[in-house]
Amino acid sequence: SNLKMETIPEKLPEENFFIEDLRKNLEILYFSENSRNRWEAQKWLNEFQNIPNAWKINFYIYNSNNLHLIYFGLNLLDQLVSFSWENVPQEEKTQIQNFLTNWIYQLASDFNIFKQNTTTLRKLNLIVVKIFCQAEKKTFFFFLFDLINSAKKTETICENNLNIIYCLFE
Image 1 (cartoon, rainbow, N blue to C red):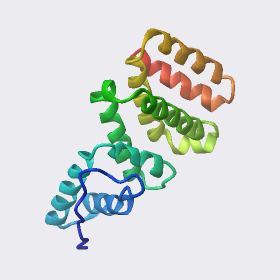
Image 2 (image 1 turned 90 degrees about the vertical axis):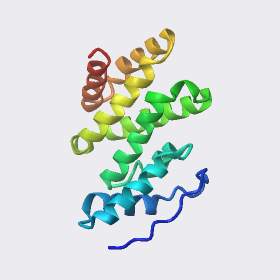
Image 3 (image 1 turned 180 degrees about the vertical axis):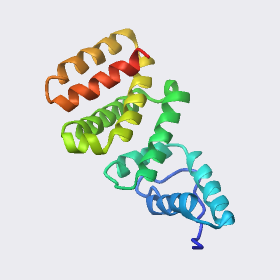
Image 4 (image 1 turned 45 degrees about the horizontal axis):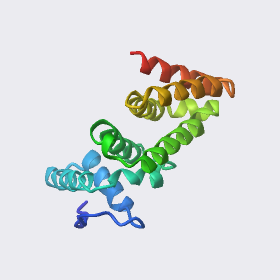
């Protein structure tokens, strides 16, 4: 299908994160048989990744059933944490940490949801580990303390927290 590739502004407006365009371009990239369309979609996605604050799409897509969309968003967040975390204002760091923690608990608190989302949880866990490996010692120890305490809530939260601890010491 020939979908119109819209131009992306230099700065992403808060109220419009181009989620539909993002979904369409990911669909073209992964499912189109037309190499020209796939190339155009890849070009659009690359431009999108370079928009400041593009990672904020995660606040809007975390409940999506579209795994390509979720993984794309998580990869943006992973890139932010891996390469630019020291430049992120403290308020945003806290917002991201809380968002990731809530998302993890949402996926890990129910056995069926936990089992259906192991790949997403693995990616979320790795991002959280990258964040806390860059934290001050005091923050890191609070993180470990919270992991240990929250493990008492449910068996699946305990299992996921063990996965996080395993990632920490890999």
